[in-house]
Image (cartoon, rainbow, N blue to C red):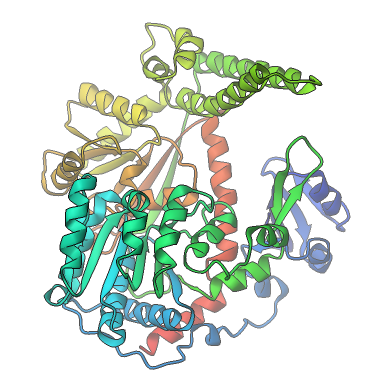
Length: 593
């Protein structure tokens, strides 16, 4: 993956995955140099043709190609032209103009291809647009049964939004599905007793009740936060696919149809149309660059990205704040670097040593001409432990005391015993407490995210003991009613100004009463990071700025995560995001609504 950006002056910056093949080709480019400090290649603009010829179809243009070459902007008007007249359905609340166009665009794609993706940025209102599509299709194409798949925590929110934006509940029975198997069967019977209806359920219920749902005659499925079910070989993906394939129309809602690799978009689209990209082996061969020289096949890049981009752009509508008239708060990024202490250094050395020993064990087993079942079991255990050490790296970067709370007895013993009983906390925790104190002193609210529940709980305890403030916890293991109470308290109580959550809090919740978001650690994907900030950065915020604070322990797992997020964001931008010329064409199309 070659993320290419034009710098001021006459240079191009190229960031890429490391591979000997890439390096050998870069060295053939006249004037190309590698900048160690920023881990990127610098290429003279005059060598652009040479660069393109050496990497055909492998380049992601962070700066649009036409801007690099100085050519006129391409005409993208045909991409956003609607080939039929689509009258907007009447809605209780008037959508914004860009949402009106979104409804029309989605309907147009549904009638042309049977499916579409709304990938609007966080906070721009994908839900009301989908509800507008439902109303149009019910009134104009006779849809009588619709299923909405979403996260468990927002089922009732979906039902409330349908009633808020439309009067569909007058003619359609709207029912959230929940409870144990016996209760669900009664709800299904109740639903089928009505001639028309909308059923709202979370993904796992669909997986558990696939056969029953396939028989109910649904005409359209809405899949909210579709990236959650993107895994092409996953059980959730397969179950939803079995239900969706029975429907005439499928709507995907996700700001991130590609999170880190092209396989993501394949997994999403195969739910609605397995023929769109063809068989996985053909897709893999066409778009994914692999290295077969080592012990394992390794993905080293992507190819024919221009072709993949064209296929994705044909089924996606995506707008950011730059394409809409809606004003969102400006994001102000703030990175706070925290020193690594001697305890963390000692644990880091121990983790590296432990990882090395595990790799040596794997090599010994692989070197055997005949391997026993016991050998294979030892190898699997060692490989699983190596993966577990990634979490150990992050725990150490956050605060070594987390090893004391680890569920893994191995991690607890190997590394928890290296933490002195007198250890008071990491510099990152100290920085967090100081930052939260200053935010609260300003009379503002703050949302704090951690990837791990143990970290989230530790943060709550630290803030409660040090600052004597009430903190709210939101995680996947917390009861649904308690989560809703936490959200209500944070929104409406002046006594609750701090909420700490895992990434269960990162989607589907509106928390624009806050204007500070703290990333105690970095998520796996750029999409999740955007979603975190999007809890506060939403339409309706009274703030003109939202501050996103990244706490980074130097020389730790934090820095590696930041680099991985940057790479994944480059792929997303190269395939899904619109460039400046497309943005202009999209604005023109929306102005004609």
